Amino acid sequence: MVLAAIAALGALWLSRTDPQPRADIRFVSAEVFTLDPQRMSWQQDLRVARALYEPLLTRDAVTGLPKAGLAQSWVCSDDGRTWTFSLRPNAAWSDGSAVSANDVRYAWMRALLPDLATDFAGIQLRIEGAEAFLRWRAQALAAHAESPGDPHDLWSRTRDAFDRLVAVRSPDDHTLVVTLVQPVPYWLDLMTFPTTSPVQERQAERFRRIDPASGAVRWETAWTKPGALVTNGPYQLEAWHYKRSMRMVASPTWWNHASMRNRSIELVPIADPGTAVLAFGTGSVDWICDVAVDWRSDMADQRRAWDARVEPTARRLEVDGLEGDDLIAALPAPGPGERRDLVVIPAFGTEFWQFNCRPTLPDGSANPFAIAGVRRAFARCVDRAAIVDRVTRLGEPTTTTLVPRGAIPGYESPAGLSMDLERARAELSAAGWSDRNGDGVPEDARGTPFPSVTLLYSVSVDRYKFIALALRDMWRTALGVDVQLVGKDTKFFKDDLKQGKFMIARGNWYGDYADPLTFLELLETGNGNNDRGYSNPAYDALLHEAASTRDPAQRLAILSHAEALLMDHDLPVLPLCQLTAVYMVDPASLAGVSHQPMLEDEFWRMHQRTEAERAALSTLGREAAR
Image (cartoon, rainbow, N blue to C red; front, side, top):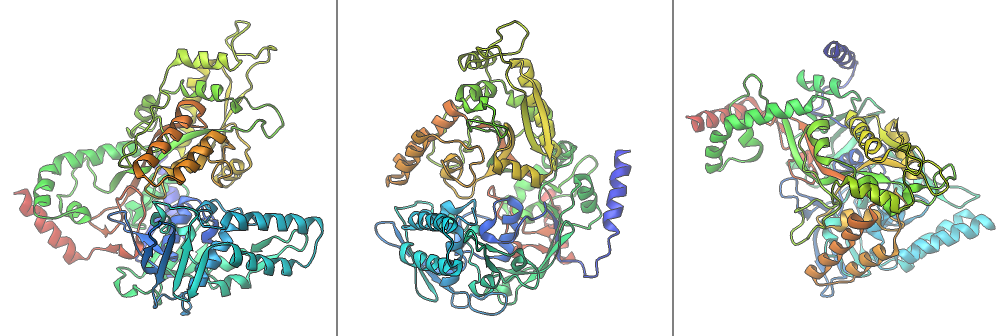
C-alpha cells in the first residue's frame, strides 16, 4: 500500500506539464524562502544563492578552502585589521552592467539595518563603526516614530551616516577597503558566505519603499522575482513557480562563463520524500540534496554492502591516481541488495534540541527552562546512542558538544553532559522540582505540578517526529513529566522559533566557516540566530576576550572555556549527534557534486557524463578488478 501510494504521487508529479525543455541538472531541495541575499538564513536559500550570486570570495567545492570570487586578489595590513580587495575588472551583473565596489557597500549597509533584522548582521558588525551605525539607525527610527518627519530625509541621512561611520571604503569602482574592529582570523572564510554578496543598487532601489509612520525601509519581494532580479553569479533566474520549480540558466555575463559545465539547473521542491526517491529512480531528477525517507537507513546498508565488495578494486584505482566521482564511477556496478547512488557525508554540523531560556513563556507563565538546572536534568535523561541506533538508524556520531569534535585542528572540546538518570533527578530537585506527594510527578514547593512540556518540530521530515517521540518517552519515564508533541509546517515552525513560541524545539546548525565561533556565536546575546533567547554576560565576555586575542592557541583555549560554560553548565541547547548529509546521486551519471563536509557546491562544475566518458571509466574499473 505504501509503495502504491508513493507511485501514485510520483505519477501525479511526473505528469505535470512543463513547456520548457529539461534542465541539464535537476535537483530536489526544500522550497526557497527568499532570494534576497541579505535576508537568507536557511540552508536551501544559501545553496541557491551560491548559484545566483558571487561574494568577494567563494569556497572550493573540493578542498573547502576560500578562493577568489568577485575579488581577484586581496591583501591585509600588518596589524590584521585592514583588508583591501581588488574586484575583477570584468565582473558584471546579469544585465551586462559592471559590478562595482559600491554594490558591495550597499549590500552590507542593508545587512546592518535594524529594519531588516537580518540573521547574519554579525558578519558586518565586525567592521569598525558598524555597531555605531546600527545604534544610530535604531535611535533615528525611534525618534521618527515619536515625532514623524520626512521619511525620505531620514533615509538620506542614514546613507550619510553609513558613509561617515562604517569603515567600508571604495576609493574606486574596483577596490574595497575594509577596516575591522580587531583582527578576525577567519575573515576570508566569512567573505565566502552568501549573505555578504553584492546587490545591484540601481535595481534594488527601484523596489525600496519607506513606511511614513515608522520611517523603516523595506524592499518589495518583486525585486527578487524573474524578470526583475539582477545577479552576478554563474546563473541568472529564469523562472520561479512557488512550490513547483525554480529554473536558473547560465549567465553569459559571468566572468568565468566559458568554464561552466552545464547551461541550466532546476530546483524541484518535491515535498513528499518517497515521491522524490521515485522521481530519482525514473531519472526525472539527478540529485536529491536531503534524502528523508523512512527507509534511508536500509539504503545506507545497501551502500555499505557495495562499498565492502568493491573496496579492493577501489584501492587499486586509487594507486593509479583515480579519485572522487571518477573513482566511484569506475567501480563495478551494484549487484542485488547493493547501491552506489546513496552518499552519506559526515557534515560540519550538529543536530540538537533547544530550550527556550526566556524568563516567561508566550502565555505569560513562568518558564521552568529559564533555570539551567532544569535544562541539565532533561539533558541527562537522553540516551543518544539509542536514538542513532534505533530511531534514525544511520549510526551518526553522537555528541555532547555543539562544535563537532575533532573538526577544527587545535580546538579541545569540553566533556559535555552524558546520560545519568540519578543525577538528572537530583538536578531537577535542586532546581525546585521533586515528587512531594508520591504520585510520580515532580511539583514545586507550593505543590504545583511541573507544567506540560511541548516539543516543537517541523513536519517536513519524519525524522524529527520520531526523535521527538523518543525524547518524550525518555523524559516521561525518567522525570515523570508530561510531554506533548507539536508538529508544524516549516514556515510556521520557523516563525514560532523567531517569536520564542516554544518550550523545547528541534534544531540543527551547519558551520559557515572553519572556526568554533561559527557555532558558539549562536548563543551570544542579541545574535540574530539566537532563537533560544539565551543570555549570559560571562559567556559574552569570553567571546569578546577571544575576539581580542591574537595568539591562535590562546584564542582557541578561551573559546573552549566558553563552550564548556555552555555544555557543562548552562546547556541552552541539547546536542544529539553530528549532522550527516544523505544525498541521492549516481556519480556514474552526474559528476561534480561536492562531498566536502561544509556541503558548499559549485553548480557550474556539475555535468552529466557522456557515454564515452562512462565507457572509459568502466574500462579502467574492469582492468583494476582483474
